[in-house]
Length: 244
Ligand code: CA
Image (cartoon, rainbow, N blue to C red; front, side):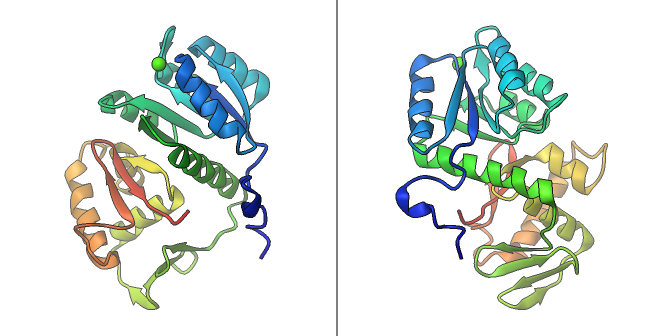
């Protein structure tokens, strides 16, 4: 296989991707810029919401890292504006304790978030997942997905197997799993899951989610109380953890 051929030289497979970093704190911006540039990413910087939108249109970056607290407005308005014309992956950079603004940004179309302070490996992993997700969404060809070494989901036959054995899921459990699989590695909010699985108008029924998530963990996880794959993102939603 040649897919990992570039790993050895320290440059990521997505090397060369253009990243728009929107952050008003110079130190934070510098930290992110150095981390990304050293891995071969090309970095464009913006310090305000206005500049973010200008650069997003002028450069059409492959991914956007967006601080929510900007001097001339909040990042939420930037997410909303970009989503009017672009599906570019957006990763929100948020301060600890700002769950609400984070959730609003995700519901408005941001793809993931990182809570400050975060480390370089975490930042790079999130970017890789988001870029890969954007690439997969484009060609749609995938019919079978592997979750960890022992769970496979055949999206064509609608069959889930764990260590080779078929797992029987209810239609809701299956829909929930597939929604998570389609966003593998990225966070998905309570509202998004509820609307995907139960339909519009169900976004307040977080208790449904808890019940079905517990059932799904019971069927797929070795230790349902300490899930390896079906992770809770406290106050936000869930994330299907995938091997990087
Ligand atoms: Ca800020």
